Figure 1 (cartoon, one colour):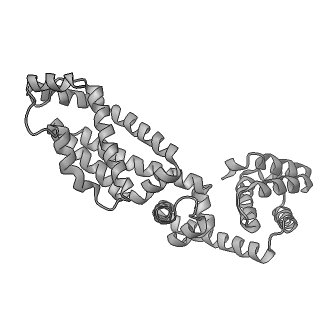
Figure 2 (cartoon, rainbow, N blue to C red; figure 1 turned 60 degrees about the vertical axis):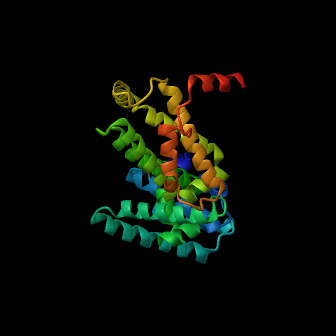
Figure 3 (cartoon, rainbow, N blue to C red; figure 1 turned 45 degrees about the horizontal axis):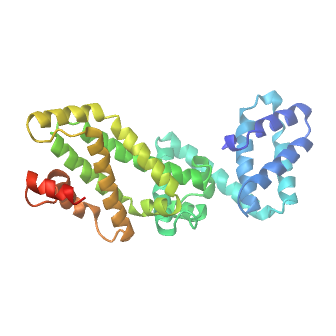
Length: 314
């Protein structure tokens, strides 16, 4: 969180050396005013937590006395219109959460479990409300944690959303890599890959809808990134394809043209599913997609005469 307030450490050091909080109060006033949101107490709390973190890392001889730091925050908050009672309640709640988190953390894994609970709650709220309508308060309530706990893991709603998308993408990538690194023949590999790809979108349909409708640029970047990551497994995939060609299972066609064509076809199927508001399972489309990819949609092979006739009409 302190990265969001780059001048805070310097202001605390300077105040400690001078034993004067006037300049610090000016910096705090500016920082609290710059934090997004309408709740002054919440904005003050976020800057206060960052300040406490920085203050705790200063050498003892360079620290402003704790009582002076607290008094400075209290004065600035009052000047900005924060309710003292509301601020006190938030500070006490945060202190209790810190104490509970530290105690649980000693038993191991609590921070990780809390983070996972926040991510699961965020996915539910974003899926139901959309990104813009979702609030950190709703996510905190769904995760059964304080809002301060969420901000300790994720500095903003935007950061939470982007990390959630990246984490889900990494899960898909791990599944894809497991299949692409297997000893399966190329057709089994492609079929398994299609299955986990469609299952991923079925499982995360709410999040994907939000991404497409409210962050289309993010959807495009993630598709490009995903294709780029899969391309890293291309040497192994090409070996599988060469083996299949030698066995007359696959035709000798340009690999990259086929690869990008297949990915485009798959994304087209997904876009159709999205346009119909995801009212059916993508996995149900797998038999049709597999048949078209493997065998095309023509009932019989085209003769050379038919091919010439078709070409001449173009």
